[in-house]
Amino acid sequence: MTRDELRLFFVPVQEIEYARGYRNIIGRAQQACFKWYAEEEEMEANTSSPAL
Image (tube, rainbow, N blue to C red; front, side, top):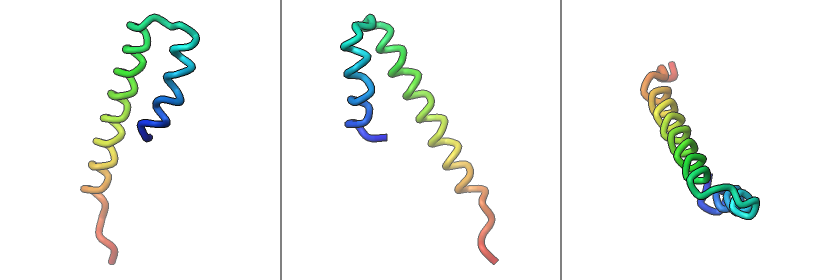
């Protein structure tokens, strides 16, 4: 996910006038999700068996 894609998500959220704290919570949740996903991908890359 790129910075521009995140902006496309957050601009409408801001226009709806969600509280700044709520927008912050959404951003933190996304960061946690991206971190988890990156760790899963890394683990999968490290445990994949070599081609025979």
